[in-house]
Image 1 (cartoon, rainbow, N blue to C red):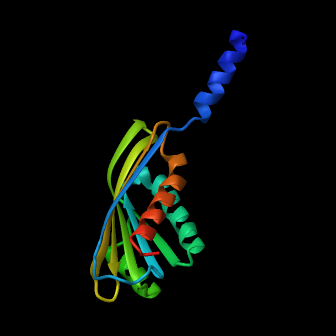
Image 2 (cartoon, rainbow, N blue to C red; image 1 turned 135 degrees about the horizontal axis):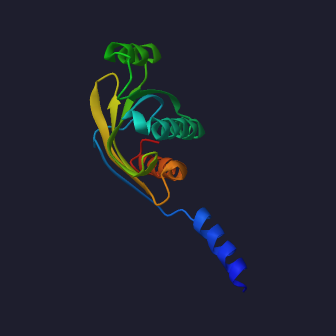
Image 3 (tube, rainbow, N blue to C red; image 1 turned 30 degrees about the vertical axis):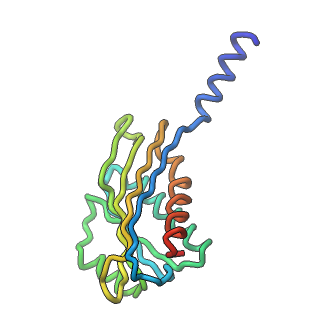
Length: 167
């Protein structure tokens, strides 16, 4: 192969290759036997990560819909000027069966605008009893950024929720 074509070939492979690692760990309350049905999701993150968390929340809502789960989400960034009371009122208006809180716990930047790793703590509460019924950790690592890793992350999260018999 000519060096010019080899270079183009390797460049195409390098730009289209995305090494992604996703890990989901969980712990479900043994006495909780309900399926997710009507879930309000609050996603909390630092302002710089809000694009990633917005995409994560949107993809989660799509996955919920595919699994016949009703859902709504609200983003809460570190620069949000909404009060906690406003968030509580949104949850009350929706009157969910479960409340899912996704909180960013760590982030690593490849450049000032490209996130290559982000971690979340996820809590699912039974809304009527206000008790935590499921806890999880979601770790996403993308060699060239996590934007393209979001869909894979949601798929793994849904599989874990299914394995834990919440779906």
